[in-house]
Image 1 (cartoon, rainbow, N blue to C red):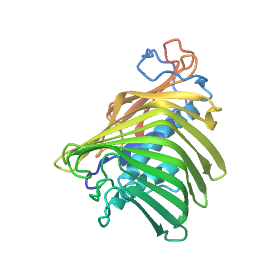
Image 2: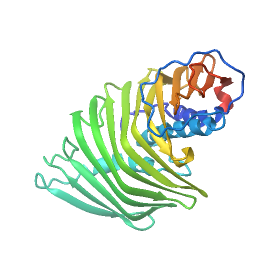
Image 3: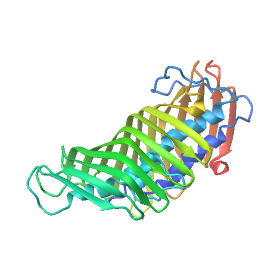
Image 4: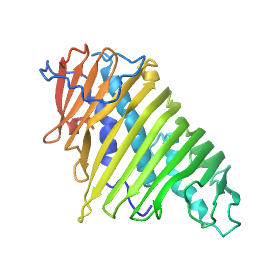
Length: 342
């Protein structure tokens, strides 16, 4: 795309991916009062957060947010990691799928089908409807991609992705537009020699640019499940009512600042099949010239009013607190530098 929706976003992704590793206890008691800051309700069959499991629980909570954040990064051309997710790879297909509309004029309303071979075997089939035959994705139009044993390098893709343009204002891919795009994954999978990932569910992507310096991206996952393998470790995770919103402001000198919030509930095999909720009552603020946030708070809630809270502190530090018994006070806390988390 012409507009980099997530300029400077990579440090924020790295931050969230590793922040959970700091939630490993330590420190003494804290007199800080537990604020009822999260608007996300505690889900049924929630996991109780204790001193023995809150490190793992925090890691799983942040990985759920990181899963969608990485997908946003891929939308803007960032490289997938060694273990790509099905959702991340699917989102990376979005620009190419929308380019399918740019083809020779046909009869208005015609359904267009095409196929292309993959670099190392297999093929991808496309079906799209350009209702007004203008060669652009407009409201109500859609494109479907079906990967048939499509091999690109060491990655093998299979399954179905459907993209639909539900709302569009302005010219898509310009410096002044807004668009709402639906994405549905139907057992879309990505397999590498060391990993596999299958995604199933629907997403809503809201993309907007008001100028060359102001952009935003929101990803909503009402009910999305993923499963797979990383090395010998198998996993399964479900996100419910999950929303991530990121706004980016770019200055004249090229520096940018991200502001990100995310909330929702999720379950995971690593959580004994139980659920947790996560929220950001104060948005995470990340200048592109720093490798740590300058403001923000994360709140993770479990059963019996148990809470883990991570609060950004001045000078690149973070306060991590656990209230395991729900009495309104944090029993355990630790103050660390963000640099210790990498």
